[in-house]
Structure formats: C-alpha cells, structure tokens
Amino acid sequence: MEENLDNKKTILIVDDEKPIVEILMYNLQREGYNTLEANDGLEAVNIALEKKPDLILLDIMLPKMDGLAVCKRIRHSLPNVPILMLTAKAEEIDKILGLELGADDYITKPFSVRELMARIKANLRKIEANNLKDDGNRDDLNSNVMQVGDLTLNLDKFEVKVKGQSVDLTLREFEVLKYLAGQPGQVVTREILLEKVWGYEYYGDIRTVDVTVRRIREKIEKDTSNPKILITKRGVGYYIAT
Image (tube, rainbow, N blue to C red; front, side, top):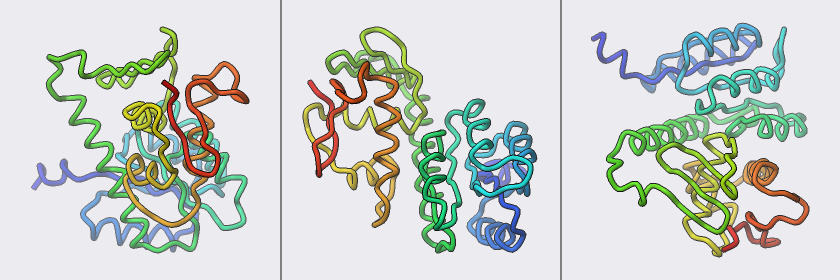
C-alpha cells in the first residue's frame, strides 16, 4: 500500500477560497492524485519548496503574497514543475504577467473541472516523457544535440547555446524551441504548438504561445525587434531561421 501511494502524483492547490480548494481536492483525489493545500502565498512557497509537488494549481489573488510573486519564487527554485495559474476573467494583465514569470498556462474561473483535469494530465505526461528521455540511452551523443545555425540544443541536459553562449530557459521554453528547431525553416502554427508542446488541444487564448515565444526571444536574440533566429510569419505562426 505504501508503494502505491509513493507512485501517486502530488498536486499543490493554492487558493484562499475554501469551496474551490475542496472541490479541487475532491476531484483530484478521485482521479488518484495526492493533494496539498495552501491558502496564502507565503504558505504556498514554503510547502512547494519543502514538498516539491509534481504540479501546482496557483490562484493569482492571494493574501500575504500574490500568485505572481509566488510563481516567480517557486520557478526560481523549481524550474521544471508545471504551474497552472487560476485567474478571473477580469485579470487579463495578470494572465500575461503570470506567463512571463514562468507559469506554464492559465485557466479562467469559473472553469470546467473536466478541462482542468485534461490539462493537468497533459502537463504531467509531458514531464514524464522528458524524464524518460533524460534517463534513456545516451551512447549516441550526436543524436541528442540539435544544431540549427547559431543555435545548439543539448536534449540530454536541456541546455541551449547561442553562438556558444549558454541561455537559461524554462522547460516549457526549451520544449517550444526544440519543436521549432526540429523542423527549421518550416512555419508552425500556434495551434500546433499548443497541441505538440503543451500536450492538449483547446480553442481559446493562444497568447500562451505568443508570450512564451516573446520570453524565448528576450533570451536568444540580440535585437528582439529584429529577430534573426526565431521568426514570426505574420498571421500564421513561428519558425527557426536556417
């Protein structure tokens, strides 16, 4: 029985509204997850750093420390844990800020529990897939390095270099860059990136992709107003220049 529990994924729910926390705990536990809860920002940071959950559901409006500050603190120490922001419809600016601070995605209240569960599963699958690759056979080192122009990606170490200089990306940013670099010169739509990198299809706000691309550009481009590596095809999507 102990072993079973150890294999369960643990999700930290951060929200100061007790009814929402209870609904999420009930549904997550029914799906087989372990749950932790925090009702304010400081508590959320402490629990996250101590318990290292597999995924975090993070509300923006929190006492003691708001969700944006929490996201920034957690992302600094736990770069790969998926963070899904829970936002209200009126918090458009906060949604964008959350993504810029390293959140993987957001879902707007009131949300469908079914959609939330689908996103949770997709994010956890993506992390598991990356862990499997990381633990895999590394004998053929060349197959684990991608080189496109000035861009070098080490798929084992999740490292990126531009002209030999290391660049610090989050796991999600790395995945976007890796997917685009895998087909250099080919334009990839935002919808395809959502499906292939985030791991799910949904009709909604594609700014998740746009904000992530902007964050990547700030790290790999000398002049973000005139990018030479990660290029926008207006009205279509993005591609890596060859």
